[in-house]
Length: 201
Image 1 (cartoon, helix red, strand yellow):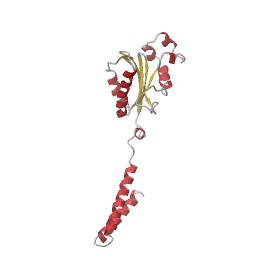
Image 2 (cartoon, rainbow, N blue to C red; image 1 turned 180 degrees about the vertical axis):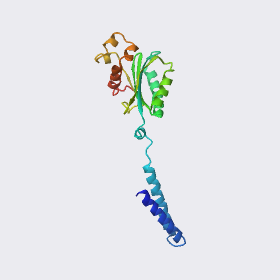
Image 3 (cartoon, rainbow, N blue to C red; image 1 turned 135 degrees about the horizontal axis):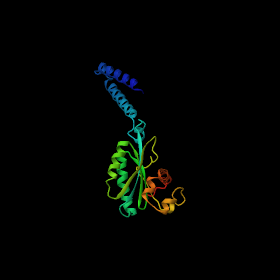
Image 4 (tube, rainbow, N blue to C red; image 1 turned 45 degrees about the vertical axis):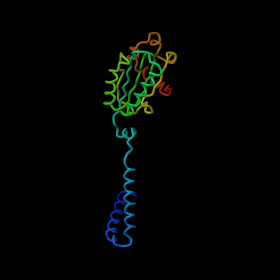
């Protein structure tokens, strides 16, 4: 039933109810009026868009991806990382952010995806976090779609053995340094995409 049809029914029933409110059919008309009103209300609710991330992005809100690297200030145990991730995932869900976090002791590599203002605000907070230092922005760029849309924050803990077979990492394996990531955007992306389906926890 379309809204115009529902409105016509209600208008007709209102007239009928006024005309017959003293007669035997008054209660029947009144019930029909209630049913028609409920049908219109139900239809209106069905037409409202769902308040989901996908629907909001259908409105063509510009998306950005920010990638940075940093060094952990102390040794990170699995329990530390799990607690850290719980907080990140909760906050990112509220901010409608997605992304990926890699931990290659002692290096962090993180990608953040979302609206530019939200991404920038979070990165400002991240830069003040004492749990890591030598925070370096690798890049920030507009994207047409999310690469890590399934995760408020995907996570993988990788080892040096995991990257031995990857092209372009021989220099890093000989002399691990954060400067390697700063000048190797392609390698950073390769790591993030390679391990995004190997979520540890």
